[in-house]
Image (tube, one colour):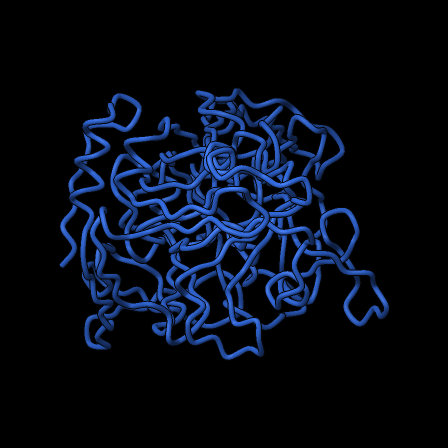
Length: 420
């Protein structure tokens, strides 16, 4: 079992603590299979049947999780965890791997593991975990990691893929090294235009050459100061299922770019032509990635920046609230590709909107709590809509944005209460 050394808080942690953390995060964790007799079932509001909840310990370092698939592990964060924490606990942070033969054991020590940097650079590098912590300035950013297909289970007509609820996302404090600092150490050649990121997950890829699980970013984006190579989340070493020993963090972009088990960084003079950029994770080149079912010849582009989203947490759907008396409505939201400008609620099917009060701001890419005091003026059913608007002016649409991948789902959420 991999030893873990927890820190009291990454923000307060100095270099010595970081070194201790890296030294403790060593060696060999084997992924276990969930046992059928330990599972419960849970029915979700969309008509895609039941999904099983596996108990704590069914997968290493994970608490109770919604099981989408065992091999390779695809695990969803229970909604109760998202509604209870601005920063999603590591043991319930969602998991998404692609290949059945994904790396289920990593046996490295911080002084032996090497992150390779090569390609159009002047000084190719191999950097150990110890060197990452000791030789580079540690930085922290709060950011949402969200699967491109989060909420796909609500899409109609139904599309293939994991039938996620809203739990294919999580918010964490990520600690690591700025990517631009690593690239500066390697030295960029004038020919450099893009940066590719490869994972230990690529060793037995079923796809034609190149076999690498590879995602690419434009060089200017890679050097923007927010993109980082992380070795910790929420003050602890990365869980193996969430990418130990290193993962790329690309704030404001969908998780397909957040390469887990990052092993190699390659600077290139082209955007990359591999499967994971040229074919997979494509969306219509339209706002919110939307098209009509059956529509043909729609230009497609690689998915990139996240869209804004907002959610209700309390009261529960269908709850009774008192007529003529204040009721506190609460939730959380995030801006996607930029900071959250506002959260607004509508009581008249979207004709008019009223502002909610925003909670503490942890940064442009983090979850943020909101609250709204409702005093009902009529008895009977009461339907509320909630809409997030980010700093760029992007806002959630009233209608579902359909595409064949079930990607970028972000229509306004609804809550129906009963006023008595």
